[in-house]
Length: 85
Image 1: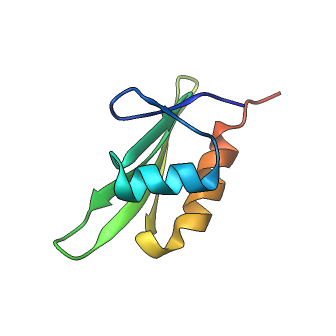
Image 2: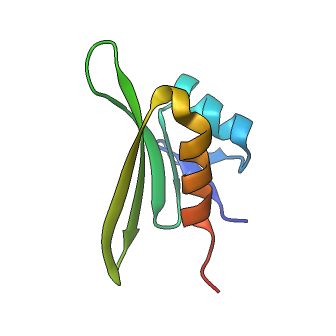
């Protein structure tokens, strides 16, 4: 299990409810080892969930989801967060 933090550096539990609450009701950002997920305003009425991965060996990866597709964004975030064996 990887430690997660929010934009203010405070810990966030590694479970779907805690991550959802932090994104939509908290700071809007959750970060782990080389991976982050955050809310981005596309327009006044439209929000996107952005999952971002940074790795020194590869170029960065970014995937955007409509805010209603939180489950898919969370699955990708957790997949990228998994340590490579």
